[in-house]
Amino acid sequence: MTLANTDLLPVPQDRRTWSWWHIAALWIGMAICIPTYTLASGLVDQGWTWQAAVGAVILGNVVVLLPIALNSHAGTRYGIPFPVLARSSFGVLGANIPAILRGLVACGWFGIQTWIGGWAIYKLFEAIWPGIATLPQILPAFVGLNTGEFLCFLLFWAMNVWIVLRGMDSIKFLETWGSPFLLAVGAALFIWAWVRSGSLATMLANPPTAGPSSGPAVATVFGAGLTSAVAFWGTMALSIPDFSRYARSQRDQVVGQAVGLPGTMALFAFIGAVVTNATLVIFGTRISDPVALLARIGGPLMIMLSMAGLVVATLTTNIAANIVAPANAFSNIAPHKITFKQGAGVTAVIGILMMPWRLYNDAAAYIFTWLIGYGALLGPVAGIMIADYFVVRRGELVVDDLYRRGGSYEYSRGFNWIAIAALLLGVAPSLPGFVTALRGVPARGGFGTIYNWAWFVGFILSALVYLVGMRVGAGSREQGAVGVGI
Image (cartoon, rainbow, N blue to C red; front, side, top):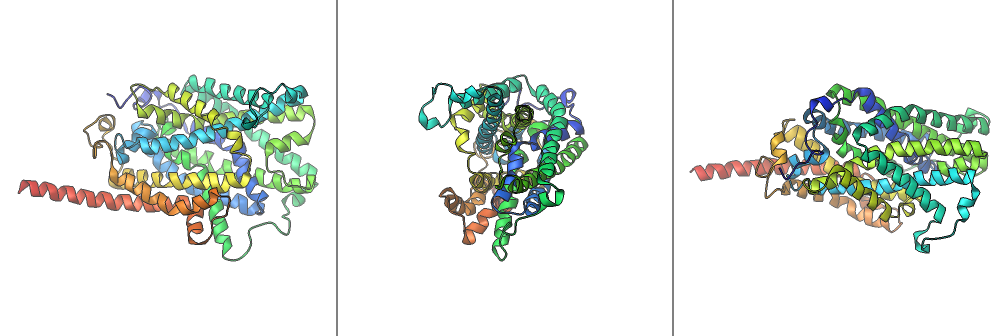
């Protein structure tokens, strides 16, 4: 079979060993990371109250939990990964389109997370050996890193690759045992801010100027915050079958995700928002970057412990969320030539070439351009896949046909043009706002409102277009069959 390899084939029953706790630990490990912290702290840094920032994150994660659980269903029932499931709606060859889109976004995330982990390692070494900052410069100026920073980035990059090459069981072990430690690190940071600010009331007090302005703009601003919170896990809403196919049962995947995702995101977003709020009292300025904050707290021992915690936090998230999905996506392009491990290698190389340290410097651009921008791209894919599996197929797939040409999912030479058209139409309304955002200008007016709700607009529009298109297409095929009979 040219459409299959050992990494893309259904997981056999004896390997479906992940309990609800393993699924929950996966999400706890992924959710407790620096981007989660900065998702809320960045909103506070932009003038939001901590209540509004945390509220947007909580609501966004409750919303995104639904498509995550729905897309998990097929993975658990049939043991298939995301690129194979996408063949049902996009065609056995057309599935490469959503798989590559998801994979490229994950490459960007992999690079960002690897840079964050490398930066934490750099700060850790700097506390022990300050001379790392003055190593001879070996990189061209346009790279934007000194030698020590680049070496630490490569060290963390190598740690990620080494763990992934050991297979999925090593990922399960890392998530299961790393999660409790990460919760302790977050709690310690919260307690520090409480003590230094003097009281919980002081820590939670909002400056008079904080928060979105009143009036019609509030809905638009909240839409941007909510969309960025949903888009934050919009990637996993697509590729979650890559993990749910290892679950023992539907109950395990549903309970595990309900336990692990919303509560953990709420907790760590709360820590990020209120600690950033407290830094205004403690230091006289808001510090939304936790690496910069921990490095400023002082004391070599404190820096070493905190940076070690950040390294573990980033490692658990990066491997699960940002390597598995693109590795499967690249393997799906040519299953008989590209294995999962080779796909992971491609992801790792692209992560370096993107120079991710340049992507993460601006908190506003990170939230309002990066998150919302790719949310506009992936929301339509989620809408199409869920509409296909639950409405068109009613949960019934012909698994063998997912792995061969000429079967139920061949469509037109391997491509379902209805799904591709629905994807394009779902993305189109958000393009003007995205182009405006790329120029560094806030998107305003009707197109701005659409862009600020991009994930939702794309999800709903593409799902409706796909359902109508498939219904009309089915009717056309039936009429054609009758005509031939006559």
